[in-house]
Image 1 (cartoon, rainbow, N blue to C red):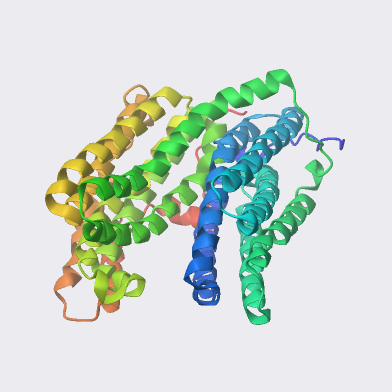
Image 2 (cartoon, rainbow, N blue to C red):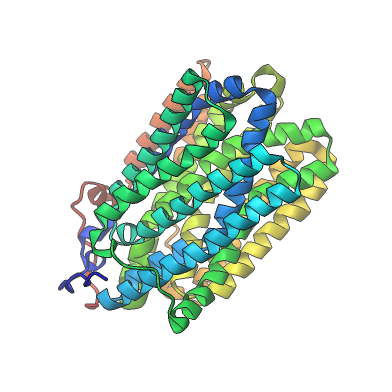
Length: 494
């Protein structure tokens, strides 16, 4: 086992540079996410046309099964790992990584076997059972790779994490294109994930050299602690994942297939966008975790800046979706899905507050308010189910969109109340909200300008940020942080 790194006089999370690194890392994560989506879109048409309807259905079925297993296998362990790494010393970090690796291997390995067994029992056939085993093994390697990124995320080396993720995705896309050109079999496509994840794991281990020789090891006390911390995170993560998906399920029960299809088309676009707030909150999570343990003043400062950034980005996203809904639906489904345009515009309004969900959920987690976090998520999901059942049955896809917009607001209010009522020192200053709403009105006014939709989005965005600048609503220290010139308030030494 390698010796741990020497204890540094000051961890990067305790330095004024941490804020700037987190913001730049957040931008990198978002940029990487966009590039990854472009890569996926580049290969998707080739894959669907080459495999045909039947084999593409097999491909989606197996990958959906493996993805579900991967989500369950993670069970909040990455979040717990980042939090624990951020607050521990060098010896504690070595113990953490050894136990985290062991737990992830056990859980992911069991999940892979269950996925293969399910495929066999469900009668998928020999080829798909083998495909599940191959894709599942790639998933197992991928989970180990993600585990090794815990130190990188905690130390705010988010550019490296993003680069490795893109490397893995690029390898899969290149492999798909190559197999299409040479006439590869369906099994060969499933096998792609093994070398792609193995390369990503190798690169990650080489980057995190000080943990490269740590062997998985289970310590009863440490494992019990990690599992106790993981279960609430897993439950909250599952509820968050259910928030939008449950509306689709409810719609399938209370509305016509056509109305469900319109709502589903809007959901597919919203699903892509709502991943962005999590990337932003994830970039700042290590700082919040460290500050929650050592410096409440710094935690309050970080949360206020995240609140302001979330309001600004949320309103801009809403403007872009409302003005660009026609373009989005045209690209996704074409003329057949035109009624989904209005559905998407309504859901776009909800995106104005969705950025706060990830930030306040992360704040509840790092401050130890796990029961409050679960309760708030239960309230939000319950509101989504009830409102969608009522409004979706009455007004179809439009009613479901209105229901989810209300449910999103309910969730944000529940999270904010759970965070700030018992912790008044973390209450957000709402001054930014009025300025952002004024700028939003200016941006949406481009609706009435007779120019193409893409031009409306661009002009609306320019008007929005112009008003924010005129009102001095863009926090100067936030802009300085993006340039690496932030000086955070000094707190107690950790």
